[in-house]
Length: 580
Figure 1 (cartoon, rainbow, N blue to C red):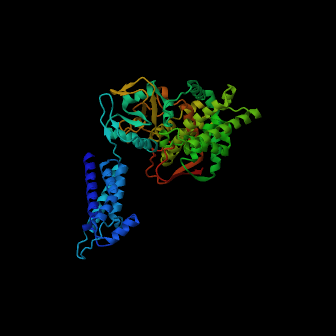
Figure 2 (cartoon, rainbow, N blue to C red):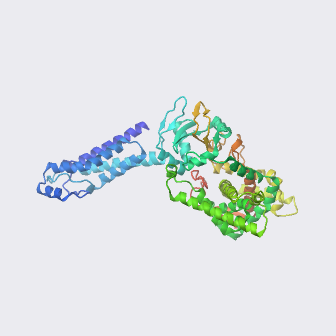
Figure 3 (cartoon, rainbow, N blue to C red):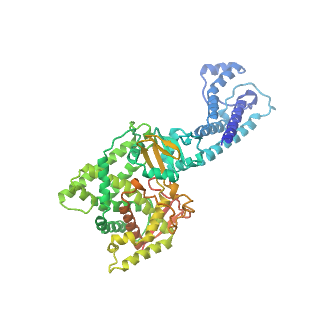
């Protein structure tokens, strides 16, 4: 890349030389050129009185010197923004004749060759070459500048913090994986949010990330908001985790099965006999309602309230503005919208709690257990937010992608249908609610394989932690206290060494390595059992009542891994469901 950059700079120097020649009176044609700016009246008068004055040419040339100096500065720079500015400026100046001021009014012989036309043509070609360079090497195939590390520090990505921050929020998956390619290392540094950040991969990096007690998940979330130092109450965090763990009890999950199935039926009734669903909207909405049914029944049963509640959650969960992390104290519209949304969520939660208390009706959901334990509205709000943000979003993404995969792999859809029919044949009832929790969890191995393979291919999560101390050592390199640490799950889940042809969805493949998509160690998913049960009930409810097929560009069903919220498929796709 160094030689290529020198070559591009040489092209830029040639183009600048062409401009200087075009500005020379002897190379200008006899046609009337006009200045792109208006000269003072006194200067215009002086020029008309003495058209051959060299002093006026020098004056006009001096006006262009700042522009030429800026061009030279851009040539000296090597970043993509400068090259883009340079190529556009040169192309404009070369191609548009009236942008080149006439520096002299000396009359030229009619037979004098118009060399400026040739030079302009050459200038246009050079400018196009620069534009192609920018589009290919700086936009389509970004090459990250790298500095070699020392004995204690790994290689570091040498981009401006603004470039890294924007890429982190807009193309996080590409940023992380391009870093590994650029450094040819399994560990590297970059600067993010004003902190050193270390990106890990490989077996040693994975083990450290999953098991090291000093890596704190909560501090990393605050870093996303640009907050340098925060204090969180571990008792409040533990209370939320404890409540989620309580929701994994067999008796609670068994009691939730009829409620989740009824919520699914309530949502599917609105589909009619046939409907085309937005894969990242309709099924997400349905999954959100089933998750909320286990947490807060009233919100899930009222479709309009559920839709409003989810829209508010989407605002809270929307990606932060990159500039918020630079100036978190500066008011901005996104932060204001998030604050207003949280306030509206609080009002909804408080109102529904008061209605339940006033009616005397008891529900079998998580909120009822919290009310019985005397927990406050604020504590309930924190739990509902955690359940919605951490549970409903990820579960909805996996369910949406599993339905899409089964729509394009009908043999697996038939396999799952047969598996469920086998369970139903063991009872005298035909309702899915007659299948026990133990049967859902242990006697649906093919459905388990489909969920696991969908989780592997459709949500390559990039986990983030903050090292609260002490300094850590991995692969001979040091991770200082206060540094952010990243580990991309794609290092394992999309690694061809473990999964040949990793982008292919194949539930029959054997797992040769620990499956980490649910997390591992102290950072394992606390709501995994509830999430898997919910996925199974939603998917089976759809498959038992509808035939599903994809519409649109389905030849290459690839997730957009840079979309960290829904992993929306590339292209314009939909799911057509036809009632059986």
